[in-house]
Length: 101
Image 1 (tube, helix red, strand yellow):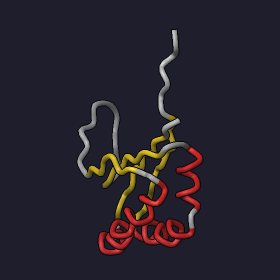
Image 2: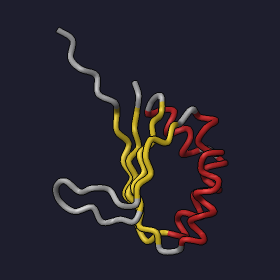
Image 3: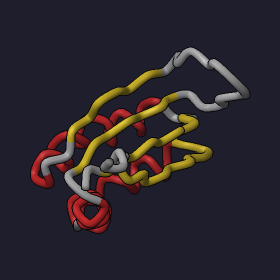
Image 4: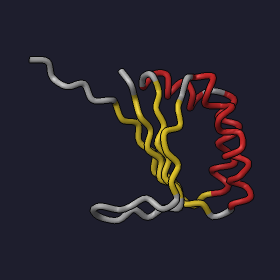
């Protein structure tokens, strides 16, 4: 079943974060991941959304997303995000399958 990642990242060092962003698609595409949205000014409908970047990505399944996240290529790349952000909240969501009648 399709899975989605929502990431809320607070970037503190744009130059270092650019290294992460520049390599992101090369690490993502071998796993069939799709970047659906990158937004630095989302419209908040309810509550608070405190971050400088929100990302929405799609994967074929939770297992594929976990394989991407654990991949050597991404693990090298993510070190730039760790160094460039003060916080990140990242969730893995399973797609919705409507109940059958």
